[in-house]
Amino acid sequence: MGSSVKKVLVFAGSAREASLNKQLAKLAAKRIEALGGEATFIDLKDYPCPLFDEDIEARGVPENVLKLREILADHQAVMIASPEYNGFITPLLKNTLDWLSRPYQDTPGLKLFAGKWAALVAASPGGLGGIRALPLGQQLLANLGLVVLPQPLSLAKAGSAFNDSGALHDETTGQKLDALCQRLVDSLAATH
Ligand SMILES: Cc1cc2nc3c(=O)[nH]c(=O)nc-3n(C[C@H](O)[C@H](O)[C@H](O)COP(=O)(O)O)c2cc1C
Image (cartoon, rainbow, N blue to C red; front, side, top):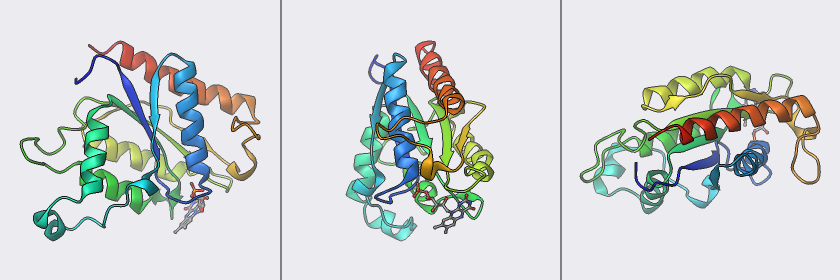
């Protein structure tokens, strides 16, 4: 497992400047740190990757994919905050995970994900909080070989859910996020 320090890679399945899921991902990263873990937040807008196409791959894996591969290899868990688009995970999230799932040089396909922990959260300005895509995202992450934590969090009415310092107004939802972050930190600590 690479380094002995156990780190969580945190990102959102939306590249939008004002993304609510980026806000939620940043809060999750803060809470992971507060609960004794190490977290790295990255913005996928900083690593634009083309829509996956095996012809592009055959010509050479794009530089940003290689950068993301290096970053993922240095982490032992992921925390992903993604909106749902039409009840499904976003194309950005699917595309990113598809690129990262590919074999590269002497690293077999899916190797980067093998045995890593994953937690999923979702935010939406609507009343359902992106809840329909959560089981689909969990299934995808499990297919990739990650160990997915149960009880993902969905944040409804996310447009008014955050205070000025980026925390959640609603205490109960904040506690649910903390519980998920804590389970991720504890799972990592228990991994040899
Ligand atoms: C193509 C598309 C489909 C969407 N479908 C859903 C949906 O199924 N459920 C939902 O709650 N919101 C849906 N939305 C609204 C998003 O939740 C909203 O744009 C949200 O702010 C996107 O996440 P972000 O703030 O992290 O960018 C959709 C938005 C787009 C662009």
